[in-house]
Image 1: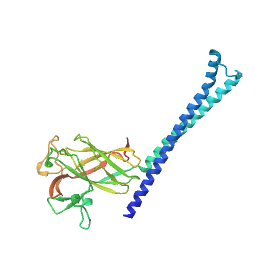
Image 2 (image 1 turned 90 degrees about the horizontal axis):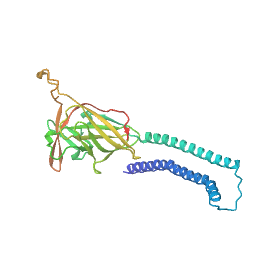
Image 3 (image 1 turned 180 degrees about the horizontal axis):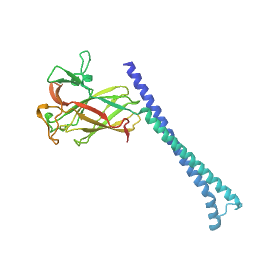
Image 4 (image 1 turned 60 degrees about the vertical axis):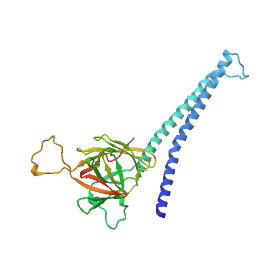
Length: 294
């Protein structure tokens, strides 16, 4: 318990440090803008003085030699503005480079495992009963960490397919999952506050995802993530279901819907059993190694 609290405190200090560094370029930019205003106002003072004295006959009791001193004056103003502009460009480039380095230092990187053997619930493990899936055809048990339900209320459990995948965070920062989109099933599900979960760096989460309908083939599932600095990412995962091979069926029509390997599992929630039809996957992978920064 103490090590967990220490880890949380270290993470919070890391977040505060990065947030402080992120504010420095913003403060410098505001300072440059105030200097710009000062130089513009200062350069207009001689013009205002000449206009008031020449056209409005307002005298300030000053004697000014309108010669090359004016050229030197405005030359120094222009040189100062050019220098200031150069400083601003340099700071902007350094800020952009800093942001890239900052993102790279906390960016999560995920990969996927689809092997059910790595998701079996072993006897010595202490797992809440609602996080266990019981196979209906055997005594085997599978476990999961988080459940993402994309099923609509009016859809029957028998008409839905689910997948069980293990996501590993091999990046340098934590990942907060907050939205899931599907291309073929046309689903767009923003997780509620109590549904969002964190995949910590160096850890794994087993996700049970239930779709609103059956999988018709290869599916693209898009995850929206956030890191600890509130940078937003998009990760597109491609699912390749395992096709059931039936030699007795002979050659199939190319347009015939493929049959996927499936297993039925149940979970027990408050004494009520809920059916899930898990589709086995030949493969599941993210289309890009690094998530897309939004």
